[in-house]
Length: 213
Image (tube, rainbow, N blue to C red; front, top):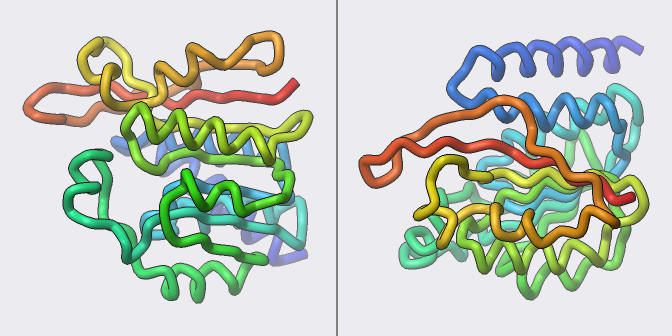
């Protein structure tokens, strides 16, 4: 249909756009959606809902009906948490819902993921983990995610830091990734490295691909 052609063209455009931007790594998410064709997507860290929309539209190339589950603090994000989690201020929940519910079957969960992730009793095809960035939060998110992972579920982690031993003590998914057993999951560090400045230092950041065997 014309709609699917539109979704295909816009997705290819986005991949190319990311490729020539300072956030090359985001093209990985869309590429893996094209390869794996998920019908259900779970995102931890909705922020402004832009990535959410891109993921849903990429998935809609193959499936008319997409289920999307989004977890964020939304209006509950306080300044102290912002600093502790190296986070950004998300958009109000109702705006994200209004925007995304036009293209998918959407459920948004407001509040802390260590509580909210346990409320979901569904298995999903694709998970993107990019919520709080402290080691303990990412670890907790991963442990809770195990409830809705089935065979062939794809999990993409953002915030895998390279060449910086100090940052990974407090932030990022590096420690969590190390603990994921190779016997049960395929693991690979994704292509593309982005750089940003944190406290005056250059940080190199990648994504990690995990697949349940």
